[in-house]
Amino acid sequence: MTTTRPRSALVTGAGRGVGREIAEMLAGRGYRVMVTDVDADTAAAAAADLGANASWAAVDVRDHRQIEMARDALVEQTGGLDVWVNNAGVLLTGPAWEQSEEQRRLLIEVNTLGAINGTVAAIDAMRGRGPGCGAGHGGGHTGGHRGGGHIITIASLAGISAVPGEAVYAASKHAVMGFSTSTAIDLRLAGIHDIAISCICPDGIWTPMLHDKLTDPQAALSFSGSLLTPGDVVRAVGAVLDSPRPVTSVPAWRGGLAHLGATFPRLAVAGLPLMAALGRRAQRRLLENPEGQDPAPNRAAR
Image (cartoon, rainbow, N blue to C red; front, side):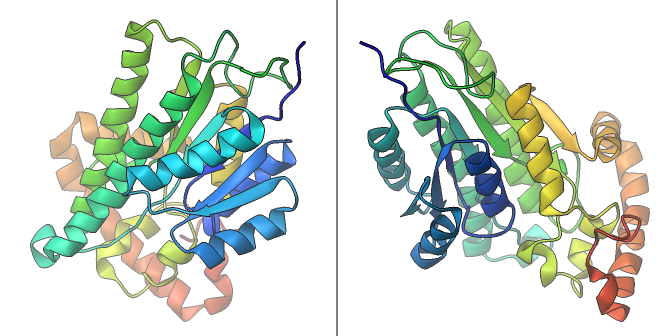
């Protein structure tokens, strides 16, 4: 006898901002969503707002055991795992030599180790559970065990090219990109073809992560393009759910510039200081015009 189980998804760092909106999108698509956040109250409040199809767990992504416990709770509730979103992250700016060891360690452990822990935990739940296709390729499937799934990591354009003022942050995101694409190939070499890995690389997003950076010259590059809204990233996640792809840059034109800078480092060294100067002008403009701090009406102002 076969039974239909609900599709399920877990999102890290989903108590607020982009993660919360991704969780809301998944719930709207019919997924049973596990909201995780390092702060228990924030996670619980977000899950309550999402309704009966959401649960929550307090998770520090640096602790693999905490990640496994949240994953196991979701699998017990739903019978499997279809989508995992590595969203949790931190941003600290400044030259590496001006940051403390604790700050450097926090960036690497949350952004890089957290994504590695989440990906490994997701693969352990998704692989070897019988035939099936990954999530995002249609409606519900029958059977208590549905193989495959989709792991989506919110990386950054900082994972593609150099970012002055955010060197350690860029290092943490470069590591995420290298790990994710390498692991995707490892899955294929192991004969596992029903687990997709996708990285979303957004430009600066107008969330609490940037709200306090308007007076920080080291964060200028994050303001040098078209400041994104969380909805821009959510739409990109929805697109790769429907059609998995290894890397998606948001917006695409900034991704093209980032790849160009990575291919020709001398060009990046020459051009990025100018872009940082443009970013500082945008920061001043936003400070002088508080009503213009909502990026949605004017995408030219970052």
